[in-house]
Length: 252
Ligand SMILES: *[C@@H]1O[C@H](CO)[C@@H](O)[C@H](O)[C@H]1NC(C)=O
Image (cartoon, rainbow, N blue to C red):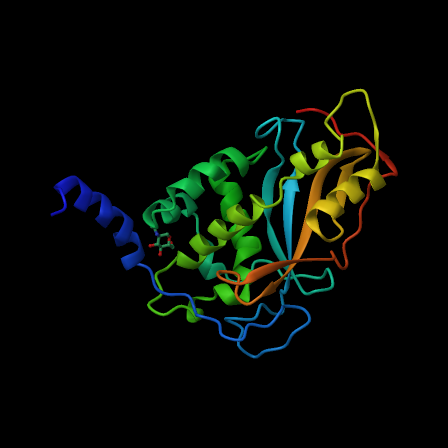
């Protein structure tokens, strides 16, 4: 027989799930941007190219010294054009509560270390990223869920962004190629690009503030829904670097 505390612990795991609906199961999923399907709950369209955007914030510093941090996950129309703020009725301002109520406390605590604003509250930054970009993702529409609970699609978004970010260790990939932050050295942009492309499997885009690297775009097509589909490294069609050929990568 289960002890009372074990029963309570088991319920704490099960209950949040019991209150959420179910995202669609996608059979025969199609790859966004190149495939075609009319099932927009299983096929991301028109926003089919996803950019996982990361910061290297040095002024002011945010996050750990040996990690880039999360900016967001932005869908675009496979060509660099994009929609924003697609559903004002789902502009949640309670991402913290939504994740907590869904039992996603480990996602939330990871976000508090790796998804940080440099000029507003973290909650306000997460709200902005969700409202601006998350509400434009077709497979996250409430109508895609059976037994939908308001906000559960935002939970799915944040859980996915965090798990995707964990597969993209920019700092480590650069360090493995001998490219570490320095206040005296400069690096060639092409050396940074090729180290990252080799590790990631597709070209990346670095962005600069004058000659200082501060942001990166990784692009993906998705086979199936954002919630359960496979993210496939892709080219950042329509995006361009603004960095010079020799760049600074200063320490935090
Ligand atoms: C979050 O906010 C939405 C919209 O205001 C509301 O419907 C939902 O119940 C809230 N959820 C939690 C867990 O606070």
